[in-house]
Amino acid sequence: MTNTMTAQAALDRLETLYAQSVANLRDAVKTFLANGERPDATARGEGLFSYPELRISWFGDRPVNLATRAYARLSRQGVYSTTITRPDLYRPYLLEQLGLLEADYGATFDVVPSKQEIPFPYVLDGSDVVLDATMTAAIARYFPTTDLAHIGDEISDGLWDSDEEFPLAQFDGLRTDFSLARLRHYTGTPVEDVQNYILFTNYNRYVDEFVRWALEQIKDPNSIYETFSTSGGVVVTRDTPNPEAVVADAAWKKHQMPAYHLTAPGWNGITLVNIGVGPSNAKTICDHLAVTRPHAWMMIGHCGGLRPSQTIGDYVLAHAYLREDHVLDAVLPPDIPIPSIAEVQRALYDAAKIVSGAPGEEVKKRLRTGTVVTTDDRNWELRYSKSALRFNQSRAVAIDMESATIAAQGYRFRVPYGT
Image (cartoon, rainbow, N blue to C red):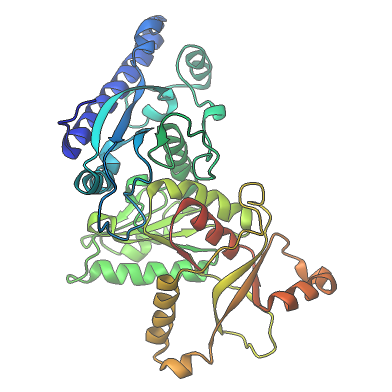
């Protein structure tokens, strides 16, 4: 173990090893395409194409007066490890985490080549390697590919084996690369533009309103926001002429879940994703956005009111969920409670007061808090006689198809959530 390696030095080493592996893999693919030369098996065993592995050791005493934070904490003495991808992208996040572990625990760091290889498809973007379908099949015989047997969420779901080393992160290099690739596919935007604060919706009217507001922010010289990145590779700046038409003409229709990123320094802007309808879509996008480690995600959309005291246009703020979506039952059983988060609830309540201009007692007439049912059956009305008892027993105030899924995914992946 290299006891003198600082957090900064560890990050530098991660970037060096990762860049070497990516260059090695790209060069080897080009050589194979040019003359059929296969990569050397011995060199591969020594880490020719490997992700770098970050290892942290802590065998000291538990710190006194440790800050009450939910991250950068070590629960037991021992060695923690994970593989890392895109250390350039994750550098600010990793630096904060490692800096706290170094300062509070006196943890020591080491960076070595891992036994986990980078699949070749993940390094071809941005390279000069051009493939067709026949080439891909041939390359897959001799180069590392995406092996789904080694990609999963066992760490997040508490299913890992702790006999030896402890997991340092929820997502290793393979799992992260898998999701970064899926995000590009689903949203049509660069993963580098995903911001720390994420909104989900499934109504174009909310997208239109967000686009209008975002472009106003970009035009404002005093705004903290810098660019507006949308599906299809469109990026609007303060110098973009006729930005409304530019965004309207973007190729967002080609993507299943188009995204819109209002960027700010330090990724402290806002990302809006139009996720479509249903718990399956909600689960899918959360599976992948979780690897970006956002500060919070929230759902804004429509729901059906279940109480006679409600009227069209009322707000509903979920403080509990009746999970009838079923997409997560195997990994997070529905009898596990999904608590609301006080800070998020308060922020949403205060936002409703600000936007409506109504004082606290007045806004309560339009803002209903309570249990929200999330169903996987859009035609739940056709079996209302069977559902009515559960609605009444749960005191549910509204029903939708995404809220509980997004909250459960936030709970599962340790991302603050609200709906």
